[in-house]
Length: 181
Image (cartoon, rainbow, N blue to C red; front, side, top):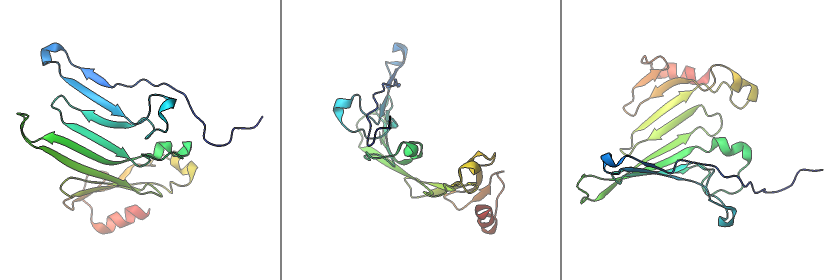
């Protein structure tokens, strides 16, 4: 008996939290959650693997999330866990009276596509925060079992401040050495 070749349909129902209703004493506040994916095979291809795609707060503010593999249909099962967040849009009213214009703030996220030794977040103001990780030659599977794999080595804040994993400030030459080791 041989294994099937080509895309296979997996029919699995998963339960998720799609809404939180607070008690009537709070005024009936509701938090709503959206997820990537379909609710059934008749809906065709899925946009993602069930990742959180949106959160709506009682105020009406909404965060919408995008992932690296959104819209891709031929993703290998081994790559599912590497489906990283790439963007978040937060839309809210500047005033709480419900009559102001909606404001949208965007954050973007990027990661080292090869060794996953760094990640950065760009905020709505354009400031970039970067985290450098110990990938210990992350492409070699057995090296990922080391106790220090994935630990933070250094943080570079949007204002240029650099700190090592212990929280003390470092100079750029230390950062270069830490990244290479």
